[in-house]
Image (cartoon, rainbow over all chains, first blue to last red; front, side, top):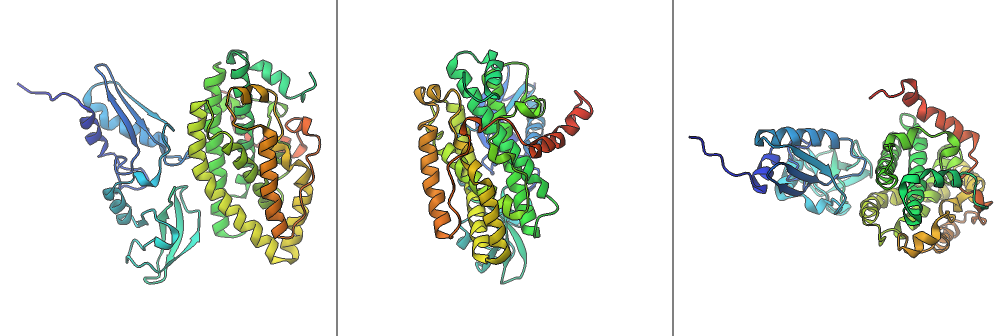
Length: 154
Length: 270
């Protein structure tokens, strides 16, 4: 006989921990701090996510990937985005920050404290407040002479 | 009723929005959403032709932010008005005269100095408006505004840097910036001109100060920046009664652009 463990909010969160940010595959949406609230009810699962930026174009992809990840639970899943609390870079976990570095993106920091994700040197300059995605700025490392992106503190 | 012609038909159009409070909220949301939508779409015209690569990326990001804010505000509007229209219907299915953005945004995008001048005037005025909504009794709006302000901080840093750069450069940069500020000056205050329903907004704590108070605070801040940079001061708002109606040919051309795809195949999902 197969024992089926009861579905809890932790079950849901552990499944969501396998959902990566579509643009940063080394960081899960849990480590990014996107998961605001999980409610498990008998007839459905409700997940509230926080958008990093209001205009983030990845939201629909995140929604559908998260829904796919929860499909094995066999219950209707309702995934919504909310502004109930603003997403801030404080919500990134330590694993999330490490994942950003693995993707070549410096974790959010005050401009003077940004460290190169490639050589960890502190001697870098910010080239532009705006980068290839809304959440990133552009920098240049004077030590290893690489341009790199940093996650913007918000 | 002596209000601007554009407002009354619109206010009546909010039939599903319930009492005066709800209608006033709907009109506030529509003015804010239209402002963000029009400046966002207009500035997105720089994508691919920005003066330098970094600025091409920056202005495209700013425009994308504004369009996202517009979408979120139209989303709140659909919940308030509660009829068959979705966010896209609000954004794309009105005739030009149905838009209630401020006249400042009726100016064409112009050259880079004009774009920076308009962003400076608009972003600072928008910041005053957002500040008056941070403590709004309308919770969903206060929550969205808290999020938007975190993003707008970067817009303000960007535009402050540029207005200083153009002013301090002297020569043609300064001349073009000065000309743009003089052309837009009389319309700068239209973003914060009182809107119909303001008494209800104030009474119900939807906004925590009057538009006149927002405008006074905004003018003080702008005046200090212009004085420091030796730029011309802003005149009073011309024709504040029609601050958000009777749009320009430049806006009609923009409207033609941004509705083109939507209307090329009505009802299609893109």
